[in-house]
Image: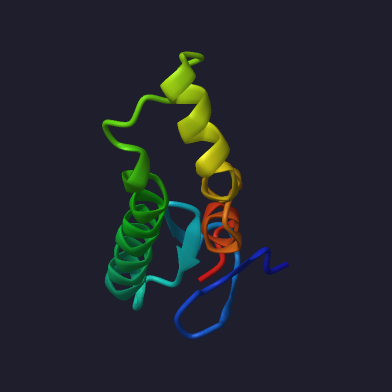
Length: 96
């Protein structure tokens, strides 16, 4: 029966009716809108992930004395940046 759901109108679709873009499914009518929604969400996630790591740019995070001190001071931020966000996880599963 229906294996897919349009992300826009929520209609149930058979495999032969479903269009897929970056893990999101749509009916023929809403394919362009789903592409726009998916691209917008992707760009938002890229920006969020960049914001988590931009604080480390240019910093010494090696095993040198300064690098160890930087890692100690930034430990909470490093831990947060290393974890996959719920939004990224949701995006990768194809949820909108």
